[in-house]
Image 1: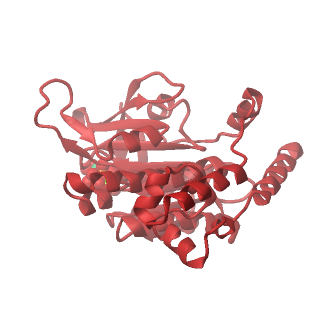
Image 2: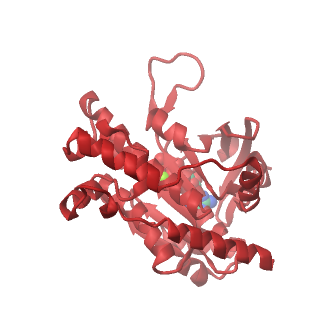
Length: 330
Ligand code: GTP
Ligand code: MG
């Protein structure tokens, strides 16, 4: 046990050592930094993984400067290799949040993993928001040294504290304590949504919160509403890409679980299989570690289908949304 703590402290130290601001980049003064941050490049990693064209398009800086800051960001970040053994050690720290239905948890190899993004997509009423509420309660049952905190970024005004109370009672938790363990923010547009996700780091670093779960419900609704028509699609995808990278980085750096929901759009030209497709396209699909397709099943049940995972077989689980929580289909 003690060893584990030492290790954590050591890792925290090395994280802090690497902490360099974007204003430390050559040629980036206060005004340029502000511009970079306003379009989503708030840290070195986001710049290091960007292409010069992306940065030029969104900030209007010269090609020479864009190339230079990318190169410097990359060198500062020590984007090196890790041995398989180190990776395995990291994997051993993965925690799993149980949803409450044994079948659903088994589908995910034991629950919703920390250090990863899990995406649920499906039609209205398929249970995406209910899963989010349930996870926000269940995350607080993780056995950590500090009380686990769930962050709920609500874009559709569908977060309901009353529902949290019911689910907490169902899980045997004190409802008031469960509500205190959830930090909710309403996102009014896609920029606001991106900013809120970036601010999660402050909760961890400045306020010392043990954030174990970030929920973005819905991930794509604002993006979908704001960027209409093909001309603006590339811009939307770029922003969404940056957003996903911020989430992935948080999941990775702080070993927390990210849960995002995504709508589907009808594909009337499709005659075989399920005529629906997730919004957000390849960008969201690629960045998500686990992807689950939700649909309505028999007798008011819901069906979760695991369609993408790095290490688990595809499969399905039936479950019910009940007052006390997510339960197995009997
Ligand atoms: P959209 O956000 O509209 O795309 O849908 P969604 O996938 O988020 O659906 P949501 O999670 O809101 O699922 C709604 C379903 O959950 C409803 O059709 C109800 O069947 C069920 N549900 C919601 N609240 C409760 C509740 O308090 N008790 C029970 N038993 N079921 C509930
Ligand atoms: Mg919903």
